Image: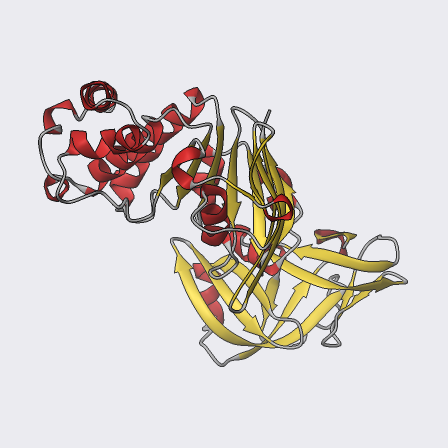
Length: 351
């Protein structure tokens, strides 16, 4: 019993081709750049958009299979959906909002409202049952949207960036509350987020969606330890270099050469961690580092006592140095410099 989705869909410039499975009790975080197809995938799972080809099953029941003209309407799919902007009905009370899904599925009004009041009590909002959405804070609105989705006892719970609209302080509190509910949720949950903290705190596995394709799946530790796309590398703050390894050198498509300690030949990915990079003004004669690349400072970001320096060149890199080193070198955007890295500090694995 699980959620299985083979989704093939074209919408404008988006060519979505995804095959995923989520098991009962599991939370899968879906991460990826804007336009990758994350929200579109959720809409297909919810029945708000039909797939062009493929098959979606919930607990072995096909809810969308164009090959046999099978399509189950959203209200009959046992799917709860928490939208990024919550989509609460302004003309309804909070209790009526929570009861909405139950009423839509045929539950008598009195029973639906009783269930709604019970859920509001669980999240500490019982005193707001008769209020309208305009009276809610962002955190309260998020809780109402969540319990509205959970009140129908769905088998699948879809959360489209449910914390994105919250301020930093509220986000942390609501994240803990959301984690508590997800831990007790027995169905299959998919969480769309751009925040690796949300993925770490809430998900069992993560899937990286890029340009309509799943490019990596695993635990967050597995994915960040060996990122397989520029998006993941940027997300976790490492430099990801792709190329072809031959005789101890990884050559990139731009012509850059990266000397490595040891790796089999063939298409490969190399990770260069920002703190492993040293920066110098002049070419380092006699340096023990086997990699020296010329570049130009593109951007400098100070983060407390550390500074991240983005470097343009044949091999674009991000280095992390101390603010003291930055000031000693008097680096500014547009300055020329050299980046050096020891071969032993570079991790390489097959692409």
